[in-house]
Length: 296
Image (cartoon, rainbow, N blue to C red; front, side, top):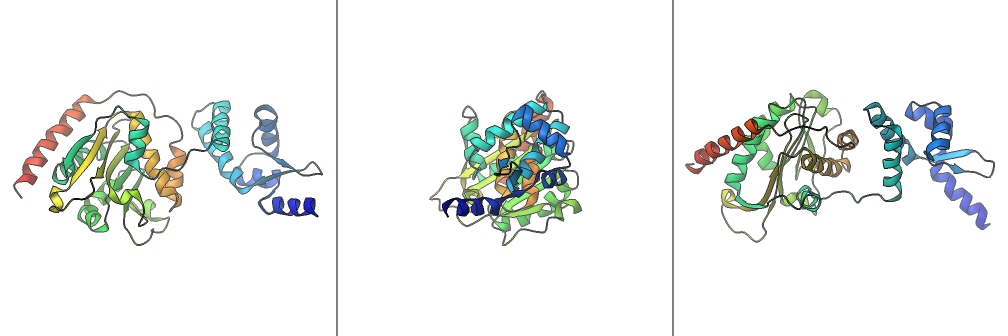
């Protein structure tokens, strides 16, 4: 009786045949068998008859390996990374600021008022997001009303980006077709989400990467523009990719667009050099925006 119960439990999740897995991933059964022989992947559950069975989670893992292989990653490297994540999966990110601090502790943290943070955000939008080649953009606004003030600007940015996701206390997520219509996709944040305390802008692009993330210092009773944040910004492609993956990971819980972005950024960013002219112009714009905002 115990053995029968155990077999029934397994069949509830491990129900895909090798033919089913082949159909769902675009690979042939022969290729899947060859991968299993050479690399021990995909991991099959063997029934007493010897037939292979796979659970649903195997489908997306195999698809990710195929995407990375087709993107130029060596097959053995892509499979090794997939097996590592299966056996020791990293916890999903809940905060872009915390993830960037954890992975890149040498990045300087600055205390900025919201007015200065806005100026820095506008400068990055103008010098990086608007000029980058098909960037993936992520914007964290805390509250829907703050996003509404920037919606026209972000709608314009979405028209030249590969994907654009914005985060706030939106009531619900939009349909999955929204990004294809050149509009930002709204990602709702739960009441207990740490992202409700964060301001962020990530431009993941091979030519002009940039990231700005800031955490609001608690316990303030000041005007909105005088609210103080602890902020980090960087143009290092590796650090920017870390921030982008964290943002995509948070979105993946709400929308397929987040999962798609996360899988697309599985590899390390391509090597590149910082565009010092763009960085200089960005800070020139910061000074101009801060000066303009200060007289309001």
